[in-house]
Image 1 (cartoon, rainbow, N blue to C red):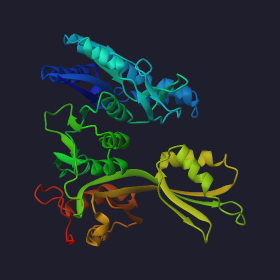
Image 2: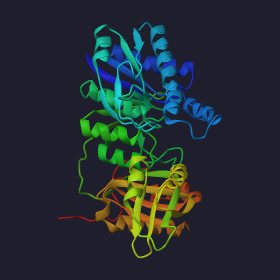
Image 3: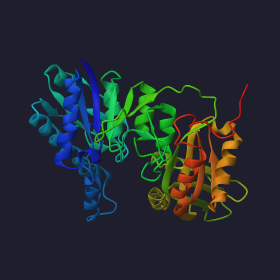
Image 4: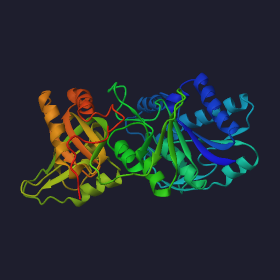
Amino acid sequence: MSQIVVKFGGTSLGSSEKILEAAKIVQSHVEAGDLPCVVVSAMAGQTQALIELTQTLSYSPPAREYDVVLSSGEQVSAGLMSIALAKLGLKAKSLMGWQIPMRTDTHHTEAYFEDIDPQKLQEAFSQGTIPVVPGFQGVNSENNITTTGRGGSDVTAVAVAQALGNVTCYIYTDVPGVFTADPRIVPKARPLREIPGSTLLEMAQRGAKVIHPRAVALAAKQGVPLKILSTFQPTQGTTVCQEKNVEKATVKSIVLEDNIAHLNLAPSKKEEAFDLNPLVSLLSEQRFDWDNLHQNMTHQTLTFMMPAAQAKRFQGLLQNQDQAYDLEMQEGYSKVSLIGTALAQDMNICEQATKTLKAAGIPLKGLFSGALRLTLLVDQIYAELAMRLLHDCFKLDQSSGSVAALGGQQHA
């Protein structure tokens, strides 16, 4: 019998009826001869409800207490899942992060796992019991509850799979795998049966919501097999695989990141030298998701982009810096990213993308490239249209040759 990890997202656990259906999936794994460890998110809407509850008292609560409140949603799910499994005649036992224990660093609200002791999980397996673990939570060296950030239950699942010896991790969600684009925005989007880990990581980092980027990165680093499936549709899902041709310039998917802010920062006193180090430290220590940072030495300015919600928090923290800064912040942007391989090698891809937007009258606000992505910055009102047009442009709805970019160059 093979040990596995089975993780369910919040939409899969949105009601007691859905929890019971998810429990039946666990039962099917048991009947197939697997030994599942179940990882659960909070029920759909619960984390946001807890956030709003804390805001009735404070918009800046102590981080330690904030984690105590938010982690309770997953605890409820773990208990309910154990009850549902028992109803199906299966032995199950919920184990909180502090009981296992799942050790993290001391960074509240965005903690990283440092060590997970598998002993209690193995004890449960040896007793014929299914361990049910709440995602999103851990405990630090001071025995304080920590949380791993929104979507962090994916990270928990992969970390548990790694602790059990790199066993296969099944991520059950509300979509039947990974698509060439968000099917709610692009009706022609096509499911992908396989996807390289590097491509999935880039997709997750650039806005795809199907899995947390830290989970993909951890799985790739530790060699944890990943499979993404639907809780509600019996499909093959998507298996994460190795890249087969890393030198061929291809577009494999298109992803969207909304609510982006563009920040322009300069010293309030123009005669002062611009010390970049404390700002980079601030961005790093607070684990902000910043992109395209550029320093103009001539005009003593620093420009970069980040999610608007984070930008507002950055603005507040900026007031505590030793040096005074003037901050200009423009919101209302979206990043539409083409994801693939060797994109920087083929200028035809960039040309096709920019021509497509221009023909539709969509103003291009910025263009950023890397080996695995080409990101186009547009006004948010045009973002979904841009996605559909680019999906058509690169024929991603077609299974045969759909990943080949138009006008791709051949390299000797």
